[in-house]
Length: 326
Image 1 (tube, rainbow, N blue to C red):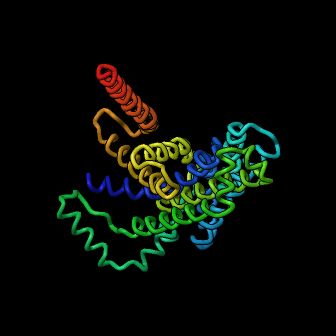
Image 2 (spheres, helix red, strand yellow):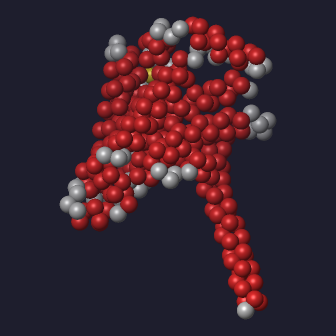
Image 3 (cartoon, rainbow, N blue to C red):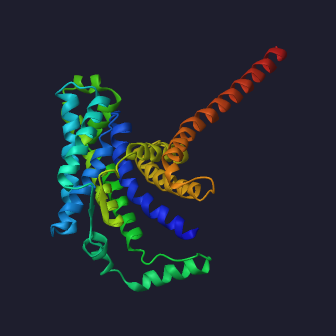
């Protein structure tokens, strides 16, 4: 059980990067971008094919980020310059990316040599004593087995937090504030002579760059990139955003972004625990995801409705008491 939860936290931290990208479009820009399902695979495919051709894994990951940014920018161009509906432009790009990803990869699945990934290089710099210490704690807690290495967890935690703080900083800059204003009220920001088209293209591009980065890292951990691995990524990203906001709030940008990371981790833990139930199978993962999203959407509204009902009852009781006193 503990080993399974470790894996859930590890993958949740990586998927949190993708969730931050989804947060930029859906919450900041109010742009329903479905490019995510395609750009996730684009990042994975570009990284895998680059590494298989002898490119440094760090450079290959950078190529994946650039490819994701280009894919997102094209979606933004379709919407702003082509005047295509936001939802439809994302769908069109997602469909186009399926064929583009096959072209990039050359085959449905591209294997990655486990010794040629970014994480394999980091393992060479990782002190073995750290693994022994934490594995000892795992054994003490009664875990069935301990992770071979903790380098992925710690490295990805640092990378994800750096991206979180960079996102916070960016959204407080002049361009970031204009981006937020575009999502809140496009007409208002246009009246201030801001170029909303460029802001939308930039925002969607940055979002898909993060999604592609997540895909590239997932491919290097799994040891392969598959053309089908992006199916449902947008739902997972939305689930992470919605769960995070429901559990941790969204009063400020800093709280919202840390909530997204927490939501991604909680989502992976819930899915892992759900799949351990006897009557559920691995093929039920999409159903579990949909169920989690429904609960995350409905539960806060039910709680809010109950609070509002109690508030009204209390107000009526107070007014009734004042009426009797008069």
